[in-house]
Image (cartoon, rainbow, N blue to C red; front, side):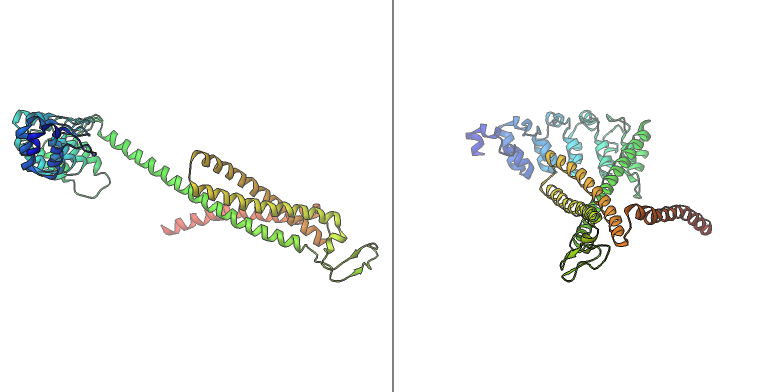
Length: 394
């Protein structure tokens, strides 16, 4: 009080949080300090903090009933926040029942009717806000005789308080106490209520579907990348083994060929038999096997690189690199599968002493026919089994 008397201008200063001294006193419930400040500076009842709220709004936010009695005036009660809220709006939004009850008692009838039916920037009255918060106690207070509240007022979305109460309880098994209170007070649903509920439910369903789809895609993508990584390791191991230990094995001793069909062939220990006897065919085999091996190693490098990008972050540059890395990964995986198939065919041609055409037409083609036949049979049998199971379950 000495500071107020000697330096009254200090009461207008805001601290780093944007509050004046009277705002702090109102928030803490120090009603004696609030009273003393207002005695010396009555205009402080309308001073605004950084958020555009006066001390009455601050006291209503914290539910400081005694402070409300000190700072209340018609001007402060009618004063609005930047969101178009009066003190009663603020009390309802913060579920301060005692504060709202005190403000209703302090207001004169004409002002009270104006304040309880006033709308914020979204067109919501006190009753709209109370229904949105599912606060049945405040709803009962508002529809009491002393408030004269308009129960069928509509907000900017064309919804009444009953519309909001019905929508907020959609899909819930809780008793509709608020709806019963509103209906007993003459509340009705607006013509756009059903449409609003349907739109809201549809938006929620679409949002849920998008989230589920995104989650499924991420899960599938992660599983696919893990599967590709496992196959890359497997194929690189097999290709390395085939490179070091090709089909047909290796010579075990120093000797010259005694086979009349290969009179000029000489061999040394640990050298490939196939390479000496069928150099042209084995060269194609080793070339294809090299493609398979290095494709596997490249896939592992790309996987490690993309995982590093995921760890670092998801900036725009990283996102583009991830897309490029994924595209490159699938290209390499395709090359790996094709080269693995050729390695298999050429390897079988070497160990059976036949050509690639014979293996492709006589062995591989038969395998593909059997796979297709099995797949067609599965597609025919599974629906039939499902039909039979459905008939038996009836």
